[in-house]
Image (cartoon, rainbow over all chains, first blue to last red):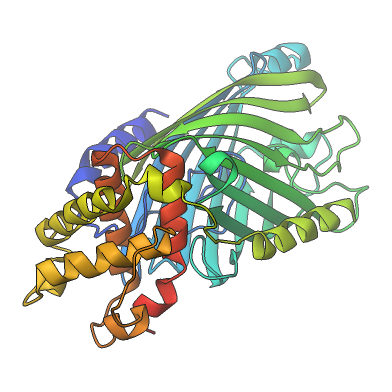
Length: 286
Length: 141
């Protein structure tokens, strides 16, 4: 974990030196979802990471932490966008589960780790201009680095592909004269709890489509409040999965940095009910 | 199935929920009438000329004439009863080779100008929404 923190601080320090032209408007690069890329805190949007306009690079680096008491999730994500068209991303997740390790008699400090590599392309439309919402398609390749635990609770695979289609639109003159962003994402997946509990199961069939959505209202130029929803698959027999939800506030003072805080409800996770907690993320962009 | 319906409703809303027209004078008044609009345009042009991303587009321009025209254009657009007698936006920007980033830079200049003039957020967003409709006329390709 230590080298990741060092890497993150190095990149954060270097971000202000990048000569990105940043031709896209403030906050249009979104935040970093747990799977990486650009979107809300929980799910990908159709927007492309960073602030690069046509023929420009953009990108982001983010650190996020979610603590429900029984579980702690940390995510380090990086993404690069080109020409407001293509996006490549990586994310690495670390999942601590002190209550579960104690209940199951696992070695203290046992954690789940997963890597995610993503790609996204904007197909048509625009976040703000013209008549059509921005529509993008993408994929995540996710791979557990600690497969023995997911496999032991019934997951079929240690890695898998998610495919998704997202539509995102920002209305400049929304309710109460505020800017309103809506996003709808459909994802084909067999991830258990996003992949932390592996993929599929011997009893479940093929991957299924799940729905995910976000809404955000910009109170002024740099503060937005919103809510998110992400449907979960239910492949594992040993424990029920509930859909994920959050309410959030994001602060985007400039194109270099953004902060987000959220109250996240994961529902039942690996047999422990009522997993709610505070989420905090910091993102650097160019 | 339920999620497909939800996606469908959202998509229909995203395509169909945009409507922009000004049928009263509230926006005009919020912008400070013609004098307020002139002050906003003044600030916006100042920012555009100072900005290395956009300054070259104004080389050789008659800034006084541009200021008057754009003030009239906005004043008419927001229902202020002014008369804009210039060419339409497509003709006005033809051949300038303006790109998406130029339009976005102008949006940023306008936002900063309105912030500097303490224009209320709803009025800012209303004006930005009206001007965003001219994106395809201004940006080539």
